[in-house]
Image 1 (cartoon, helix red, strand yellow):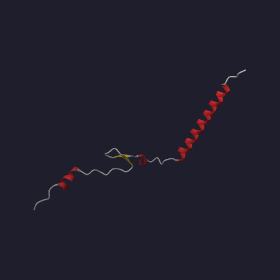
Image 2 (spheres, rainbow, N blue to C red):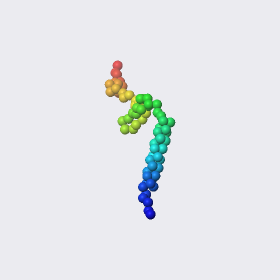
Image 3 (cartoon, rainbow, N blue to C red):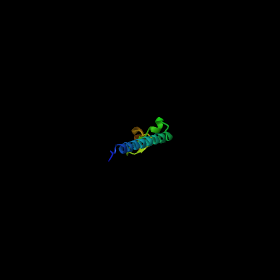
Length: 77
């Protein structure tokens, strides 16, 4: 008198598949709502000498020649 559980298992699989499909659709719509500009300037990140990531470019390094000239001894008259 006992029937197989095939129909019950099939229904469970169909429910899981439908749930997963619904979640994917919701995720896709959420990504479309929060769309980024896609500009190259927005995607660039800079790394400083300590390894920290930031959005602003680092200050340009000073030339070694300028440092030597500025830190030298005062001229004598």
